[in-house]
Image (tube, rainbow, N blue to C red; front, top):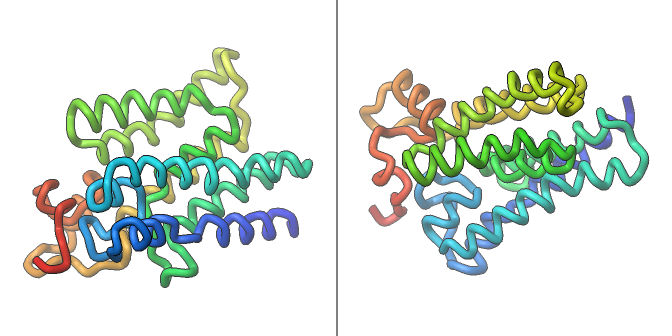
Length: 228
C-alpha cells in the first residue's frame, strides 16, 4: 500500500508543475489563465502564445509528465499497479495543480503519455485518428470526438484482449476507466469558474461535458482576452 500511496503523491507533485503557465509567462508574457478557455494546457497556449510553443508544451506534458512516471516506476521494478498510480497521479496533478490553487489543464497530453508508457499503441492511434484528425482537423469539434474516443477505447481494449491480439489486463482497463473519469470530472468543474452571466448552469454543464466550453460559440470562447 505504501508504494502505491507514494507513487500517487510523487506523480501528483510532478504532474502539478504548471508548465503551461510558466511557458506562457516566459514566451508570451501573459497569464494563460486569463485567456481563452482559461486552461493551463497546450491547446490554449497554441491559441494565445503560438503553435510552436503549444506543440513543444504538448510533448513536455505528454512525455515528461505522463510517460516518465510510468517508465521510472517500471525501471525501479515496481508493479504495473504502482506504475499506473504514478501516471494517474500525474494527470490529477496536471488537472488540479497543488501549486496553482487546484487549477490546471485538461490532461489530454498527459493521458496520452501514460498510454505510451504502457505501450497501448492501438488506443493511442485510435484517439489520434478519431479524436484528433477526424474530430479536430476535419470536423472542427475535437472535444466531443476526444471524449468519444476515450469512451470507445474501453470496448476496443476489451476486444483486442478477447481476440488475443494484444493482452489487456485489469491494470490497463483500470487506467482507461480512470482517465475517462478524470476527463469528465475536469470538464465539468473546469477551473472552478462560475458560469457567465445569463448562462443557465444545466446548459453550461452540458456544453462543458460535450464541447469543453461554457458557451455555444467555439471561436468566441477560445479567443477571449482579459481586456474584452
